Length: 133
Figure 1: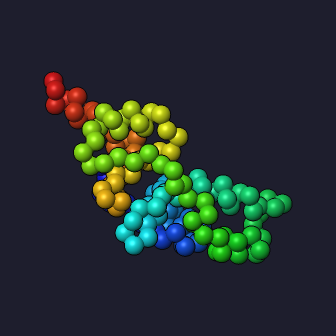
Figure 2: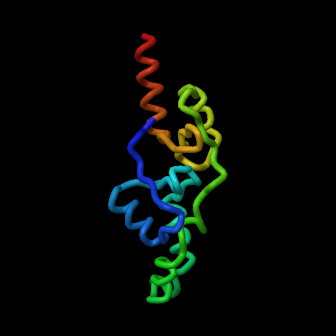
């Protein structure tokens, strides 16, 4: 599991969340309040919201203002598959095949302690298979 991920508050603006993801070169941010995991917001979620604001092929001042005032909590994903730290990589792999969202939170006592991505799962499976040889 990847332990270095970025957390934001649910009342952060969508525009600021997009800036963080672009600056940090990540596709997902964990949304957390008081240490409790609430969900994820993805760059795709933000880009889709932004696309609904575009008129005549560009964002005007009113649309840019909306990006500053609409909150991550309005677009974040909350109904997610979650894993515990004791779940196996095989379980994670099977779950990843069946979900649309490309990140799985690893949760311990309602707190996010890590994330799994398809790339990380593939890397772990490859190492596991090599260890068996």
